[in-house]
Every structure is written in structure tokens, then in C-alpha cells.
Image (cartoon, rainbow, N blue to C red; front, side):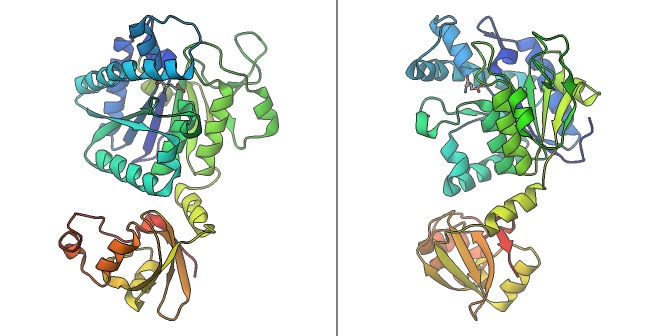
Length: 368
Ligand code: GLU
């Protein structure tokens, strides 16, 4: 499989690959980390979603393989996450990479304000050349705010970061017409242009105590990713150097994106129904927005309504014509202080180093 130059890649590693007999598979992980380092040296950007906290915590607590209640799972995750993060830090360090631990809940990827915060942190880490290693924040994730499985979490992260490709490493090399472990006639499906009801009917459930997701959760992830303009791949990660093997023509299933990341986002922004406020801009800013540039404080002439950071706002010109819908990087009170100000003055005006744009170029849809 071919990567386009400077791809943004989200890599999801399941517990079964990472943990064996209650301990991390360090040798295998070293190989994977070396692959990650190779791709990053080639100019690609990588983010890891790693499971394994519950599996490692189970072993540390001596729980064995029985089914766990939600609080027990959360407790196991709290114990195991420490070793999981340490395992990744050590493996990436061997290949000269720095790791960051990021724990998210579904609220962090769905709520707009938290989404902006999480995205900004992840982008800052990526700009600094750090590999974020993400897991669900299992300790605080009660039923309502749980993503539930890391396949879906990985897809949400891919969507949030505008990733080009999401790779789900599994113990199977893709989607089959039936379960190849039980049916010798099962055929591999290399390419999925659209997720159809027939395809969904083919997907089975989870099949062992360490993995939350089966093909069903992988298809749910594929729906989120492809609608966000991100290709998704399911490949077998069990071999040594699994990323290299995949790129050297390894067998896999590719789910094709149904749009581009930017147009998916712009469509979503253009379709926002609830707008909490209005930003009125001068002619210079209107022109800059029309050319796809960010909205800077200097171009703002007035504000209306009460909005929070991350809320949807209408951007209008001085005659009241709706130019764009976007997400404000500031709440009304701070945006008010910034009206007409120069970017270099933001810190002095607010007393903290806020974002340089009031609406970032990726966060509005031009409607004219
Ligand atoms: N967050 C869980 C863990 O780290 C795994 C969830 C999943 O694999 O889907 O153990």
C-alpha cells in the first residue's frame, strides 16, 4: 500500500497485539516503534491509539481472565495505564522518539470546546515531533461518556485531526466474507468502496477476553473515518515490523474515504444549525476569509450574542450579509477585548497567550 507524502496516520494497536500473558510484548513493540520512526523520518506524522491498560492491570491485580464489572475494568485500567505508558515511552525512546500520554473520553472528541482543546494539544505535540499515545480515559469514563472501544476512539481522533489514514492493527488481516477461523471458504475483501448493509451483516462479534472490538466495532470506526475523509485499513499486526510489512504489500482491507477531510469538516460547519453569536468583520477581513485565511482580531468590528469558546458563530460583513459559519476560538468576553487589536497584542490584552486567530481557517465554512 502507498502513502501520499506527509500523510497524517493514526495507528490503533489492540490489547491482543501488545499484551501476552499479562506482560507487554516488548520485542514486537520495539519493531513497531522502529517502523514508526522510519515513517516519521520520511515526513509522515503519526499518532498511536493503544489499548492494553485493562489487560496489563488485570495481570498486575491477579484478576485472571474472568469477565469484569465496569468499576473493576476501570480499576484495572488505572493500574495498567502506568505500565502501558511506560512501555510505549521506552519502546519509542529506543528509536529516538518522544512519547506523550493522552487520555480522552468521547466528550473530548465531541464537545466542540473540548474538541478544540484536545486538537490544539495534539497538534502542538505533533509539531514538536512527539508521538501521542492515546487511550480512553477509562477511570472517569462512565457509561454516558465512554467511547467504549478503541476502534471507535481511533476513528474519532482521526476525524478530529483530519488524518489521511487510520490503520487498525488486528490479529486478522482484514475483512472476510465469513469468519476464516471457522470457514475455510471465507474470502478476503481487499477493498471496500462503500459500507453496505450486506457487509455489516457479515461482520461478527468480539472473540476473546482481551479485545473489546470485533469486526462490528471496526465497521463502526470505518463509517466515522471514511465520512470524515480518512481512509481506513485493517491489517494483521501480529508479525514483527507490522507497519513495514503492511507498506511492503501486506494483505489488508482498505475502506475508501467518501470525501476529503477538509470538505467533510466544511460541510459539517456549513450545516451547523445552532449559532450562538455573530462576528461582524470589516471589508479587509471579509476578503481574507473569502480567500480561505483565518479571521484575526484586527478585522473584527463588532460582536453580537453570547458565545463560549468552540461555539458556532455567524460571520457577517458590515451590511449584515452572512459570509461564513465558524467556531470561535474565544468566548464573547475575551473576543470583545480583542476587537480591532493586532495579533502581537493578544497576550498583553488578555493576560494569557491565546490563539492567534479568532476563527481558524479550518474552522469556518465560507458560504458566499
Ligand atoms: N481502553 C481499553 C484498554 O486500554 C481498551 C479498549 C479497547 O481495546 O477497545 O485496555
